[in-house]
Structure formats: C-alpha cells, structure tokens
Image 1 (spheres, rainbow, N blue to C red):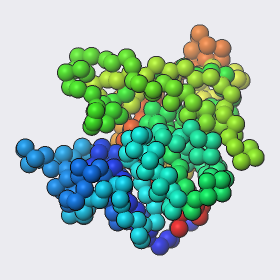
Image 2: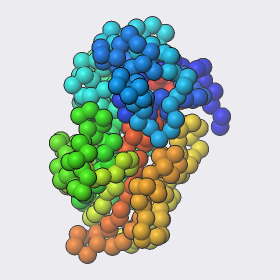
Image 3: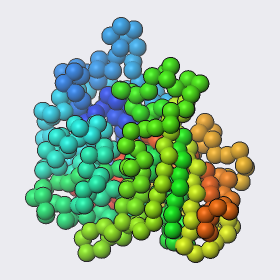
Image 4: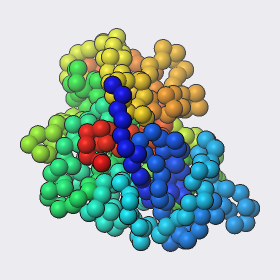
Length: 365
C-alpha cells in the first residue's frame, strides 16, 4: 500500500545538540514531514543555525553526525525554545534534557503533538513509550491523555536508547515463550552521554566507566512498560524482572548489550532464532518511510555484532544480534549479544518513525 499525506511542518526543539542534529538528518528530504522551525536555548537564539553551531574560536562547525551537515537548514533562524512561535507547526520533536522537557513539553502539548526523546514523561501512566512494531497499540493511550489533561495535542516518548534494542529483541521471545527474568550488561557509547556534560576524553580513554546515573532504573521500568499489556485504558507492566548493569565504553556510536533471558517455556537456540527472524519483518509492509525491512538482523559469525561493523545496519534502524546460545545457569536460559544505534533507532530516527506511525493512525494531522 502506498500512503500519501499532505506535507506536515515540524519544529525541532534542542536542535543544536547531538540528537537534534540527528533529527535534521532523519528529516532531510522526508516525504511526509518538512523542517519548519528550529529552537534551542537562549544562548543560541537569534542567530542562524550555521552561526549557532559554529565554534567561535576555531570557526569550525560543531556538527556531531557522521552524515554531512544538512545545508537546507543552515540559514534557518534559531528561536528561543521557551518563546517559540508555533503558528503553522503541526508537530514538535523534542530533543532537550529532562529538566527543560518538564517545562517546555506540556506547554507545547496543550496545542499540538510532541514526540520526545527525553525521560521527563516516560513514567506517567497516560504517556506511551512507543517502539513501532513492538507496542504500536499503546498509541491508544493518547486518547486518554488528551481527555484527562484537556490538551489538543499530546506527549509521546521514545524509550531510553539502551532500552530500545533490548525491548525489540525481547518482544519475539516474550510473545512466543514467555519470560521469567532478564539480566543485561550494557557497554554504551560516548554519544549516549550527549555533548554537554558528556564524558571527558581523559576519563574514558583506557577505561570503562561502570556506572551511568539513573540508567539501570530506566531500562528496567521502561522494558516492563513497553512489553506490558494495554488493558482498559492503562498499561499492565510485563510481569518479569529485569536486572541491569550499565557501563560506558570508548565507542563513538552504538550500544552493545549482553543479554541473559530465563524463558517461561523451555525453548532451544533454534527456536529463539526462528522467532526473531519471523518477527523481524513486522514493519516491512507498513508503508512508514523510516521503517527498517528487518527490525532484527542475526549473525552466525561469533565475532559479530560489533558497533563499528553493525551499528549502521538498515541505516541504524535494525538491532543486530549474535552469539545466541544456551545459558546453563538460568532456568530455561538463553543468552545473546546485541548492537543498536543509540542516536538513530534509539533516538532521533526512531522518534521520526513514531511520528510516521501516529500520522498513519490519524493522531497527527
């Protein structure tokens, strides 16, 4: 089916940061959505986007994406986010920090849809945490949110970038075999910490940082919410426990995770691989421009996945899995390694995919 829509106009709030720039890349020449406004902090406001991301000392562009700068937006003015003019805007992509999001996002959502990469509203009972193809039905919470908060718009959120690949790979296991428990250790890239405050080079070189503030709690609760069931207007979280250790490593892009799963029903490695492969094409016929043909790509090579080799699979929208094998410690134990792109599927382009789903379902017009 070929879907056709009137071109919608989007604003990007937090446009000068890593995720904001990934939004520019993800929306460049998008068939449904055009970039109509950019906003950031008061410090950047009143200048062109080019001026706002130019280092005043070196004159170099502070451009953080592997793709080249999006020239089409370089002369757009950057507005002060708190005063942004939203006339003519159909939706807002929010790439700000959580403290800013708590103030800005409800003000925007009173009038229009807000799709956020921040954690500020992820844990509200009427706010969906969406991964299209995993829990698309949770979009129905938007109706309850609009009614309860008396908003014309709404807020829907992206998961934490570490949660995304984990939830995607657990989905086919959970729906086919059930899950008793999950244990996960992450090796997360530097870009996941953002540019500011980020991680200092001298702290990460020749080092692994074994703690990321608040990360483990986010992954645990978000995984349960995403894989939970929508019943009578609320989500019943998935009943299995999730235990995480989240670390930061010296990798630019792409989160690696070692995952151990105790399934409710006994299953073989071959059963799990078959279930993942069958599920992987869930979005292939969706008609969504940013959807990957394969949500999960599985490698037989025991030296894969690796961030440098696999993070850009399906333009960063696939979760790449390898080393699927039995685990002898957990009951009905299965273990595997995954790599997911934290600023594409795990942030900006994943949020654009959410917008596409909501456009198709009629929540954004």
